Image (cartoon, rainbow, N blue to C red; front, side, top):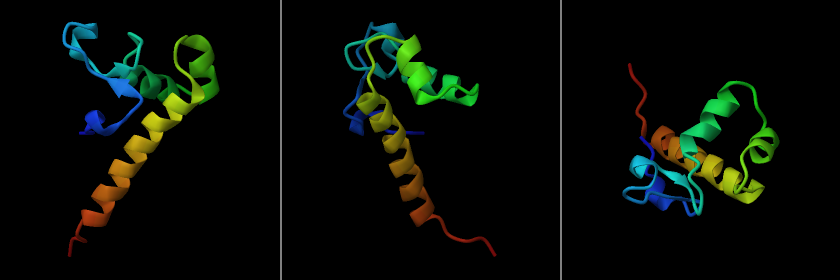
Length: 80
């Protein structure tokens, strides 16, 4: 699970979109980015389709996840 509190492009506000992590200043949940990418959208499609989010914010969210995955991989121990 990602610790989104360390990503500067997102926020979680109690009572706003049920406390889900959203892009700052929007009601757009971060999970919408990943759902759209999984369905074949590009980050530029996403930015066009959902107002209020820019390329830097999308890239910050993606980099946040990439950093966490790299950290997990560096702490993983080979099995066997």
